Image (cartoon, rainbow, N blue to C red):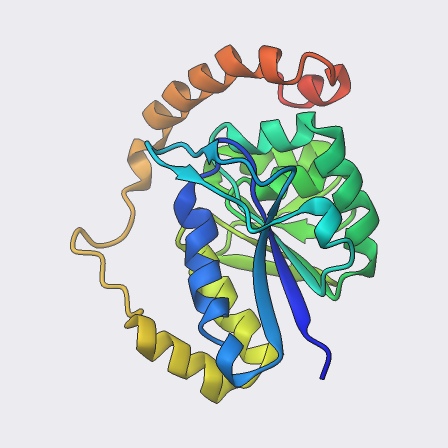
Length: 231
């Protein structure tokens, strides 16, 4: 039986939980199915995440030209590194149309948007960047995960785990996905209760300042994308 390879795209300054949350879920399904997960990057060299540790991709982009599925993680700055990379964008541009699904976690949706993959589609991303999706022709939806055709977008960080469980149930079986949930003991009960959204404005200003400071340097060769993220 031919393996169905799910490629997790990695690049500098990603948020690790965006990657390892859904990766842990889908890798748990490998033993009971033909699924195979792999992290792919421009090279096999280690790179910095947005936490003080590094990630080393398992394969290069050239090693995995035709994945069955694609998962793009996010981060406050990471997705802009992906957009600035012609190799990453060219790989996505070639691989995405042939993939059975293309998914993102958190601001990974911005990378899909920059490729035009969200144009005319409903999509979600981290709340701080949700309005930007409309600038790329998408319809922003505030939800844990949103599916439109072959594209599945998940909101911030932990929503990627929810998306992966739903996706895993479809790719294998509900029983297998429930088993993976049990193995991971994934049953969140936030001790502080629901998110306090009334504090979002102050946080948005702080994050916006970091992005405004870093973006001109990262996207200096992509003025058309830089303009999309102007205040």
